[in-house]
Image 1: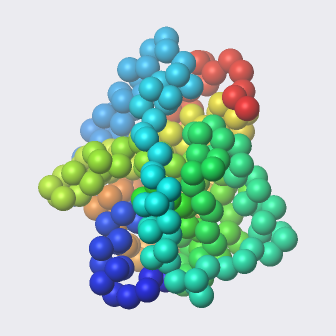
Image 2 (image 1 turned 90 degrees about the vertical axis):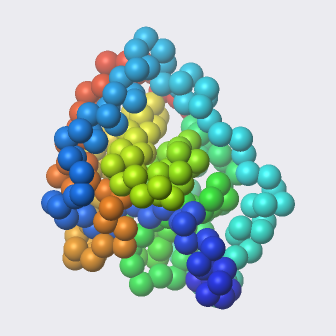
Length: 241
């Protein structure tokens, strides 16, 4: 995918894959992690989620830096989507618009040997051919919403990763699930598509973990998503377009 091994080694920390299979074993208490994750969103109280996200939205990546980051991808690994696949990519427009990233984040279909979706350092969302074929348009919307959530917590996640604070990393992954629930809800879409999406992606990897310390178990993620749906539903009163 990348031009050379050195470049890949530098870029690897900024690639954040979703749902690279989880097991029931984690190094920390998933219950406390989920509780902390939910508390992050419960603090919004009477403030609308739309206003809340706007208030914490990070600065856009500078165009020249975006060009450099995307330039690290090998052109031969970038796939031109088929008409059917392109229809799924087109369905991501409202997701990008809600996060004010329509002209900021590129969508790249990649030739990879796994079903993965990855956030590329404020420059792009990388979607493997396998993931694009496996997920429905609605599931892809939910997964990309999760990936866009990583931009909000980028520095915090990197600090936790460098300090090997696995519980913090897991909590931030749950926050990104929460971001996906909020996004889907605000756009009048069903957030439960996130559950079916991560279940499909998890099963496709047959328990082979790329970054197991970053996630709580699949069952715990599902319970967190369901809890988030309960938090968001009473507050939403209209769809954002």
